[in-house]
Amino acid sequence: MHPDPRRWRALALLCTANFMVILDSQIVVLAVPSIERDLGFDGGGTHWVLSAYLLSFGLLLLPGGRAADLLGRRRTFSAGTVLFLLSSLLCGFAWSDDVLIAARVLQGVSAALMAPSALSLVMTTFTDDGERTKALAAWSGVGGFGATAALLIGGTLTRAFGWEWVFFLNIPVALILLVSTPALLEESRDASRRGAPLIPLRIFSSRMLTGGNLVMLTSAMGAFAVSFLISRYAQEVLGYSPLLFGVATAVLPVMAVVGAYGGQALIPKLGVRGLAAAGTVLLGAGCLTLAGVSPDGAYLTDLLPGLAAFGLGLGAATVAGPMAALGGVDAGDTGLASGITTAAFQLGGALGVSVASAVSAAVTGAATSAEAVTGGFRAGFAAAACFAALGLAIALSALRPEKALAMED
Image (cartoon, rainbow, N blue to C red; front, side, top):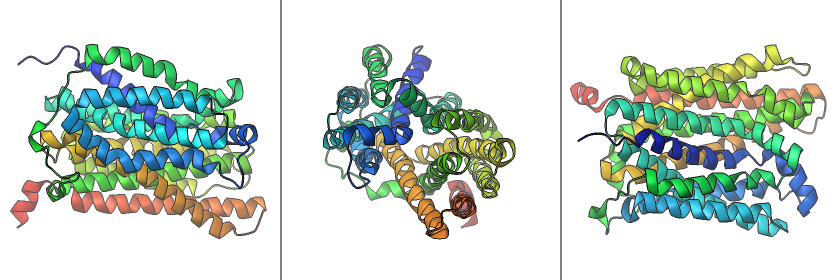
């Protein structure tokens, strides 16, 4: 059977969708002050502009993945894209804080339908192992780029056109996705398990699935924590503007792409276990380097080396994690496994930000001096290094091939 000649164009379409749903998890960070002024949020409630999306996205990913398996992966992807378009319009035209939060919840629901169905379509479109490895590397690299490029794009749009455009940006992309989907994507579903539970416990019998998702969880903890901490350090201590901060941190998404593509090329030599270990080591090295920032820090010495190492590690780890997780399940469970993998990344991000910010605040206390505030950020980066160390331990212990485990037994 000849491979589908449309498969690489289909991959570009699916990676675009992945980029957008990941982008929307952080693109509003630098728009929050403008949103707060225009919509009159009370009592610091603007954090719900971020949390509403992350929570609905993360909590509904598993139902979204199972819906893709049972109802049709292309159908679920299209339905999510329609909702993504409508909710983005509502976000941009929101006339009150409550409307914006409700619209962000709907955006999260749309992402929970789009992300797992898109990744499942990648798995079913590419049946050759070599091509699938390249496709997953592209998927992971684009996702990592979206997570780290969000601050640059969000800051630029907010400054140039207003906060509404961080949402209106989604409209033309969603229209392109809807027009292209019927021409490039084949429908697929698993009709054999319509009475099955949402999350069959048998799926966790694979050490590779469990280990791969734990690597994704810890990698996301570090990624979101570093993005949060570096944004505050650069703006509050070094005095960077949102636009300058976005430009200065562009090295992070660039190196994430380099790490993803370099990682997939090394898979034949290192395997997913070796790649995950290398990625988490680089993540930890980047965090430890950033833990040495100073109140009068310079970009070339305080930021660039740590961001570069962290970006490489993030790209490599987010290639190894999904490859391990999805390679350990049956074809009929790819939608569910995709949902678990994406949920692990989203929930890891929320957990990482919470822990790192709590550590930073505890160390800073009530002090307001630049030295004290910087000390808090240093502690937060050190906490992120601990996340990477945990990921390394998981990679080495859990991502051993099943055949090797059988031989040991």
